[in-house]
Each structure stands twice: as C-alpha cells, then as structure tokens.
Image (tube, rainbow, N blue to C red; front, side):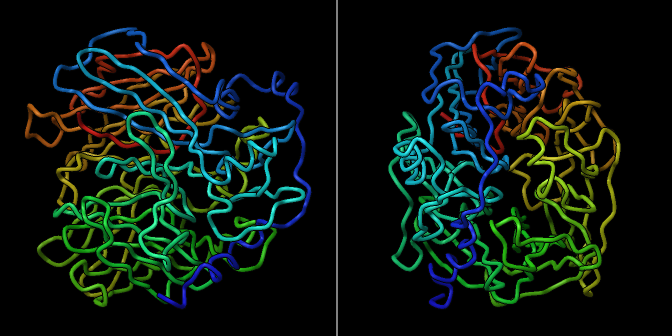
Length: 493
C-alpha cells in the first residue's frame, strides 16, 4: 500500500493542472439551447427547499417512510464559462423525505474544498474528469479536483457524497451540511474511493479506488459503521476505466474494460482510448481470502454499471451489466450534451456474463428491446442470489437525449414490463425499496425522479415493483427543475 501513495495518484491526475483554454459560453446563450438542455444547466439556486412537495396523483404507501437521496453535478457554469464535460460540475445532493403520505425536499451543494475555492474565486479553478481549465490552480492531491458529484451512501449517522477519484465527503443526513472528507488513516487520506460501494450479506461495505497509472486497485472493507477493517492493494489490473463492480455471496468481481489509459493527456479522460481488439479482464476475488484470485478474458466492450451477480452450484458465476461496443458516450456524447448538441453513440444492451468454473468467459445480450438500458437495480435482499427481476431505464426518443421509460425484466420468462413517462421527460435511476409487508422478490417499490423539460419541473415517482406497466402509484412535483444527476440511495426512517 505504501507504494500507492498520494504522489502516485497525483501523477495520474496531474494533467488537470494543464493550461489549455476552456471554451467560453455566455450565460445569454443558454436561452437559445434546446428545451431538453435544462437538465444540463445550473441549479436554479444553491439552496433548495420545499416543505411540502405537491402531490399530483395517487398516494404514498403507508409502509414507505424514509429519505431518498440523489447526487449529481449541478453547477456547470461560473463567470460566463461552462464546464465542457457532464461529469465535471460541482456536486449537489437532493433529499426527499417521505412518510405519513407527504414528501419534503431540500437540495444543498457538497461544500468540498474545490467548491469553496471555486465560489471564492467566482470561477472554475481546477479542471476535472474531462474538462481543462485555463489558469488552473496547482493541485496538491486528487481531492483538489474532487467534485463529490456521483453518488451517496448513508453510513451510521452520516451521509457520504461520493466521486470517482478521491475522498468520500461526509455530510449531515438531515441538513446536508458538509463536514469534510472521510479520513481513516494518514496514508489513505485523499486516496480514490469510488462511487458504487457494495454491502455484503454480513453488512460489510466494500469499495475500491483505481490507479490506472499504477495498474492497481485499492480495495476497502468497512464495517457497517464505516470503520476501516482492511485496505489492500490489488496489482496487475489493466488500465481500463472501472466505474462499478458487483458481488456474489462470496466474491468481488471487477471488469477492466477495453477503454484503456494509453497516453498522457491534458485531462484525465484524454488519457483513454477505446481499443476494439483488447479483451476485457475480469478479476474475481474471494471475500474471505483476497489473495485468492481468478482472472478471465472477456470479449471487448465497455460498461459503466452492473446488476446482480451470483454463483451456481456448479461453480459458474453469472452477472448482468449494461454493455456498449465502444466508449462514445463518455468520450464524446457527454461533451455534446453540454453544448446542447444531440449525442451520437451506440445502444447500451442489457447483457449477461457467464464465468465458467474452468476459466472460460462469455457474454450475451438478454434483450435489445427498448434499448438503451442503464442504471440496473434489483431487490437488495436478493443480492448475490439467482434473482429473477432486474429493473433498468430504457427507450430512447429521436431528436433528444436520454431515456423515457422504466423497465422490469423477468430474467426467467423474459417478460418485459415498461412504463413510459412521455417524450418530454428524461427518466433517471429508480431504486428498489423492499416493502416491509412482503417477502416476495418483487414485493416493493421503485422510487425515482423524472425531468419534464417542457413544464420545467422535476417529479418524484413511486411505482409498485411487481406492476411497473401500471405506472406510478404516487407522483409528487417540485416547483422547479433539478439538474440531471447520476445515483442515489435510500435510508429508512
């Protein structure tokens, strides 16, 4: 672990201090953007609060009480200058408190060191994942560029705002006040702690950080209170961009995809190139013995997100993912969106990977209907098991970005249920919340947001997980539109 220190990580992020000019966009030009572009504009205010969110239809189930958190980039412009990649805006956490038939909402920026520095300067002071800033401030470590804008994790009496390449940021789960970065040890201070932690059958929290420069992963094992149990360096990891991973009851599974770091660049993203002939490397680690490792080669591809994983009695491992045959979205389309231009990338296909006990690996599509599929979710009580149901967003429309529908996949019968929010809506990730009144795998609710860019409002939707095609059983509407975000989490009351 001592060989993977802040200096090594800083070298990998060092390109963020480059001085290449960033294109400017006057605020007045935003009015000439397509109407869907409201999802990629600044939050209407830094501080958002609605004590009682308007109920549009239906009713909130009596057994649904807790807080639904979401995170995403929400400050894309400062001083007449605009970030050039969607992944680079300062993070803002949204909290929807649900119970007693009512919903309230607050939204607060994650006040990272970067956010405070930007606010004081009145401009963007450091680049990011895919943006290069003119006259950037010097970086002292990965947290110099930490936008804390990707996901959240409730841990004990805190809420952590998560990014890809630096510390988790601690927040008050009630007020969303930012406390500061999570620090376990001096050696781990500022090390990458990624945005998709997993919780195993014993309640342990697993996560990783990637160093493409060192061809390594830092693996974290935490107890349910967020205290560090183990940190281990996993070497010989091809430098494919790893955003997410999956777990069975006994294994951790990482996929180093074909989007590889092959050069130095003027920002982090520019180091990468999609190598269409490079097999993906699948790395399987035993939870109880992290030195017990098995590698597989999988056909070339790229994916951000994984669904459920499980091991059969035969020893074969199966898991789902949302796969593309290139990396055009991250390398090109996420920049086009910021300019108000339609993205141009191939579909994302819901697929299944099979890792044979003998060492062979294969991948095949589950369905290409209503593609593109992304943000896979399942009942967390069935994680690591041969779960039958998986939920994704899907269905793209012409002449606008994003998806409009929430989908329910029956992996046993291949039946597909869907609910379409409409051609003027952009649907975001929906979480599965188990019902306290049911033990069935699909006994629960899907909770997620949608942006109606014509009406300029964000809606909170609640659906029955077993009857997705019937549409929401409750819809609440904010009096403002939230910038489109990435991931969320649920904390029961």
